[in-house]
Length: 145
Image (cartoon, rainbow, N blue to C red; front, side, top):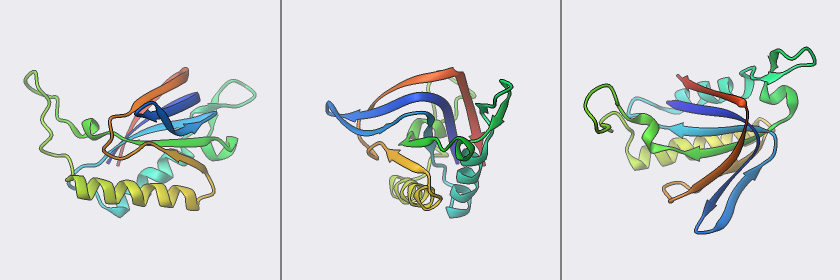
């Protein structure tokens, strides 16, 4: 499972000109599902996303997590994160999970994230989405589990 996280001041997702998900300070998570992923992978990634220390403390050090700052989480499905780009000039998606597997794990991840008490917003799985954000830093990390 791949998770590209960006520390944001705000972020939103639109589908067809309508805002379907929006957050203030927190993390924008682009979520990619691979064939080998399961609920255990989702649990591990959620733990990492919610506890990864990417927010600054009073000393200006990255010592605080999303939970610590009571930040918000915007989860957007991102099929292209599962691409193999090592060779050639066209990505291969042979390791990507099926749409059914990806939807199931995406929904599982979002439900589990909400159970933690985080404020969670989402995009729309499988839709053509426009994502707007203010990357704070910029701070971006690729998390794999």
